[in-house]
Length: 216
Image (cartoon, rainbow, N blue to C red; front, side, top):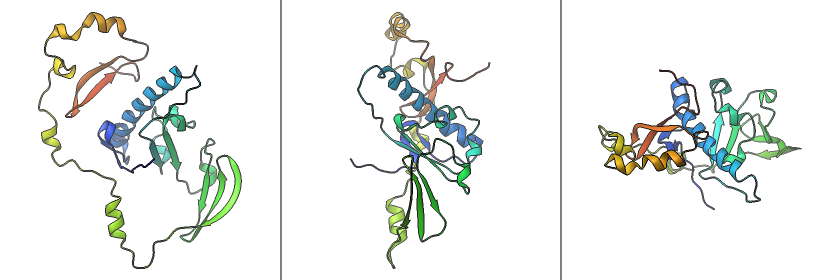
């Protein structure tokens, strides 16, 4: 199966880079919502032998763990989240600083070779040579080909200036909401999400009081 690498998280319409508290909350709050929904689906299937696979698969590269230690997403990152379609890559100067649940450890001391110390939980201590591009290879071409960012130039025009309550539910009249039916089917113990607005043309922002603490 072929895949692609993106620095933008298209499902939640954000850039996947965290470099301060604001960007951390923007990215990780949305990622937490995705992982929570996947966890619910996984729990619902736990009584069957059916194995679930989630797409897209997220690869989270963590170079400064202090920036996320106090975030609610650590509920998933403190364990192995691979069943939820997430891989974690920790970058540390000292191996002892790596989390206990890390299964594969690679030690790279220079630009020529590295050492696979732990692989899938097993001690292997195997050396390998780092791949290098041939002399004269155009690095700019390959970097452009693998460019991870897709900048949306017409972002201003893609988000409506205003949206009505009914439009966020995709209806035109109150009676089309089928409020009685919604009330009977709603599972308040799973979600209390309500639409607040749009962050993209068809990307609705929800407030879910079931997940985090809120005050008025």
